[in-house]
Amino acid sequence: MNNDTDIQLSGPFPAKDSSGNTREISMIRIFDEGYGTIDVYVDMKHKMGDDPLPEDTVLIHNITLHLQSLGYVGPDLLVGDVALQDDKLIVLEAPEAFNAFAESRGWKDLAAEFAEDDDEVDTAAPAATAQLDALMRKFKST
Image (cartoon, rainbow, N blue to C red; front, side, top):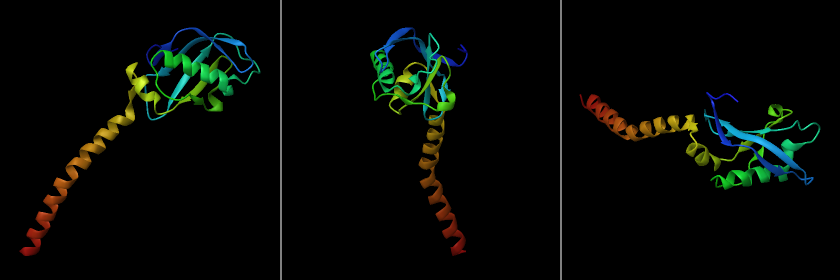
């Protein structure tokens, strides 16, 4: 965990998988800023070995339930990019509903800054268009 860029959402807790086994999770974390989809990092206490836990829908559901107990309101997290998974790390994708929960924990949506800039341009556009039209009429009349 990099304390400079990570936000810890949860400390240790147990969660059952589809085989009924209890898995010990060390923490759940996210990066402090990003664009759009948030990757949720689930650090496992023990190596997963050959167990396909990153795709275990029961385990993912139980991780989601834990996050919901902490204030997340929304659907289950999704299976993340296979290339990001590791022996003791499950990476899940958060649905858009997760953004509000992440923001409440200090996450910054970098895309929101661009959306605000777009809003400013859209607001100013009608006035600029009216000025341009007035200038065009003035030049045509001379």
